[in-house]
Image (cartoon, rainbow, N blue to C red; front, side, top):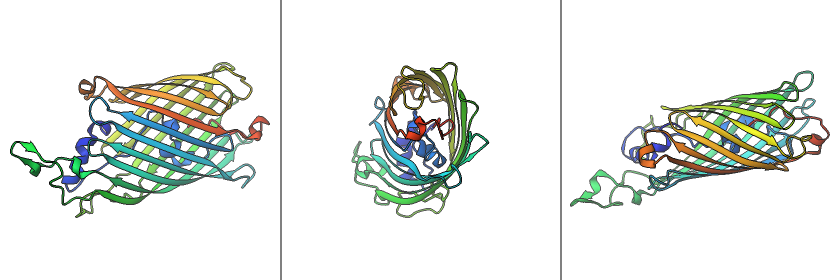
Length: 344
């Protein structure tokens, strides 16, 4: 998110020394590779038996100790045909973010459920409501940080202060979201979603004497995605993501060009290639590319930094690689129930 990554090292130190601080959640360029992080209503919003995702992000290597983020998830329908074609889906999301010289770590485990209600005479609309709960443990290596009272005889002596700080804090968090998907014919569909994370605003201060005002700010999100086939094999896939948390805001917009090079009869599971470009406001220009084959999507992306940090970073931002596997369901090949526009 804007101003989040470029200032995390400074914020980490400030969070230990001031009485009130606000932190932000993780983010990804290939946000499709972490759908349960974006909105719990996206749990199970795909056509298939189950879905597994993995994503790795490495950034700011040219500026400081690299910031590394890993995330994996699994989700699937768990109760089918509740009312005609409606179903309940469940999922698990794990991620670990390690940032800066102090190894500020965020290890989170989340479980989510989502109910998908099919509407319309052709079952071409879906209203999804999702809830998510989890547990987070944040930690930091205090011996790698510098404090003002550690400056002695013209040099710093790290690890000799910080007695008023903990090196670890744990808390629970609650998230919720809603989404709407609609297929308008066989060649166009769209998805809309909104979500709210950290509804309980848990305290996450590493100070031993906690201030009641210190808490994790709620993160509000909005998503728009579409698939528009211009021919039997070529489609445009625009996407828009908005997130705001405390004083940080992220706006991402762009498009993916998608070309089927295999059998176009089964669009969700054929061989295809894709290339996309996105812009994150006041932060980065991003490009992604990859391959889809028999339900497996492999994507890579790179961020070119355009923020005020670009002089120090030489424009170098973040690198990501993502894997998404969706296990095909025979019902898809029978041309029956298809989740409308599973863009995320």
